[in-house]
Image 1 (tube, helix red, strand yellow):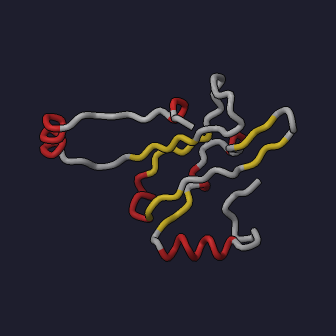
Image 2 (tube, one colour; image 1 turned 90 degrees about the horizontal axis):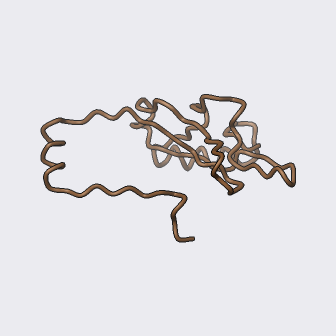
Length: 113
């Protein structure tokens, strides 16, 4: 299982790169230690944590929840990651944006692969 730990070979290079870009990994925010695996292949008996989320340092205090989702309708061997932020916003700016813009949503399970 690849979890961001200083004991892994070459992890110092990745941590240096993240530091250079003022970024941080979010693995330590996973709320359920028993559900850390982002890759699970039951037929082969393999599982690991190979998918990660990286954010700028300024967003780290706004992370509210970070989960690896084990969904019954996910037939892929990679489990989606859900991350929730508590971001401040201005009501005045929000009203202007709502009047002049369209809202779009991208569904990961409907992507053209």
